[in-house]
Image 1 (cartoon, one colour):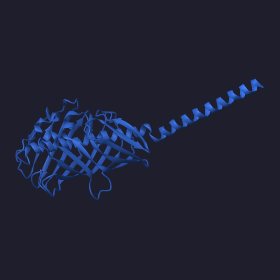
Image 2 (tube, helix red, strand yellow; image 1 turned 135 degrees about the horizontal axis):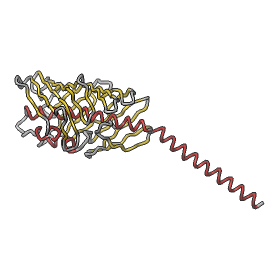
Image 3 (cartoon, helix red, strand yellow; image 1 turned 135 degrees about the vertical axis):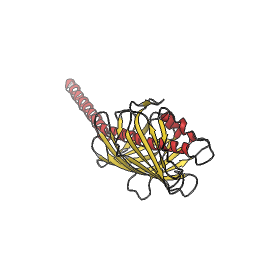
Length: 301
């Protein structure tokens, strides 16, 4: 009888342990299904692509600001470490109302203090008035441009139109199409419809930019990721970028704000925090949250 009880107890314990293990495995599998490696890759890839494309707008803003200041404030576009080894050339026929500037990083490339290596040219042209005047617009195009061996298509463009109704903050709409090719041959495409506001401070290095989804636009961005899957992005809380963070940090990411990516009928929510300058952000899928650190290398991760 005693042996039967012991054997019965062992059997019960074994069954219980198996059940516990099954529950744990099932739970882990559920978490894995909820937040897959592909979700992590999609999240990191989207933020890295956004970083690589949006920073061209920031660099051009600094160049235009230095070229034609909106006020008597001493402008510091030339102090942008990303432009330290670039040759900046103004077209001979430039006027305040129309003209062009070429930012040339050379064919062998130049590396900034944050260890980002850029090659090729960024060209900005403007028309219909000074870039800070309502109704004016400028267009950013590329010629052999790459960052960390991630190549921009020469057909890419970014159009920035001034829609300001007040002197501060100055406001623009941004429409762009970008097609990036990575060293491993994979590609991404990204089209955006954004509204940005320039929040000026006493010095340009302390300025911030706020990006929101343009009114009336269905999406803030849409495109195809490195896996060949289509996605859409909406912005729920405006994304704030810091100029000082852009100058000191390796990746040009928001310091605050929130957006949502939808891919494969799954929603991935990004939260960039409340103002800290770093490369990390959190993503949430089906109530599960994970912290991710974005990189700005040729992997696109």
